[in-house]
Amino acid sequence: MTPLQLCLLLSSGLFCIGLMGALARSSTILVLLGIELMLNAANLNFIAFWRFGPSPAPANGMIFVLFSIAVAAAEAAVGLALIIAVYRHQKTIRLQESSTLKG
Amino acid sequence: MTAALLLIAVVILGAAAAAMLRRNLIHSALLLILSWAGVAAFYLWAGAEFVAFAQVLVYVGAISMVVLFAVLLTRQNHVGDLLVEPGTRARATTAVTVGACMAAVLSAAVMASRFPPPADHAPVTSVRLIGLQLMRQHGAALLIVGVILTVALLGATVLAATEGKPDPEDTP
Image (cartoon, rainbow over all chains, first blue to last red; front, side):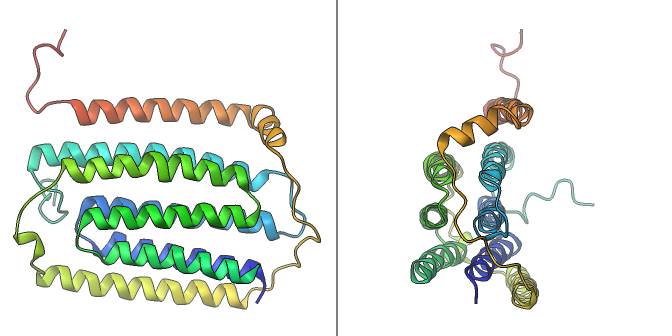
């Protein structure tokens, strides 16, 4: 197995762990953290293809990952602020109990 | 080379899986910090030092603190949280099924693909080169990311700081 395949398997595993966490847990914070894990798995792929690609450009993969980390940081900040705002209104962070908008 | 990668993979996956399984949110957050540090170690292993330091600064340093603060600010002392409802159990089963199917599909695709052979040498890069690329080719993207970060952080502050009832001091 080539190193590229090992890296891709690692990032697939991390993605699936994040997916399971985001789907299974009922705490809003853990759902957000599961999404962060999935983003990290995508970043691993960028670096793996940059490092083991056929004709790598000098810094392309790294710049992709830098922008992705910046957007992920913004997303985490807004998500956690939303969680705190919902908690202030409803006094809960459980997903099942935040059902005001449920159709 | 491969042994180090396997070790890093064990740390990343083990910490992430343990974080998703723990009941205590604080334990989950601390284990996720370990997982993010493992991702930084992977970047170092792959030769992307600059990204590794960015990962340490942003994830291990900043996002972990924000997550820990959020956990502490929304803390509840309910005993009811420890009960496992049937709905939760059914959802967990569904989630594990979906995740396992996804893992099977992804790993089958990775194993079945034929990738072109990697280049002979690792791509040579330096901080100077990254800086030049960021400011020249990707200058517009850098500006846009700066605007996104500013707007998002201001919005987060407004969301988290607004009280339920309007504060007379806030309204002009």
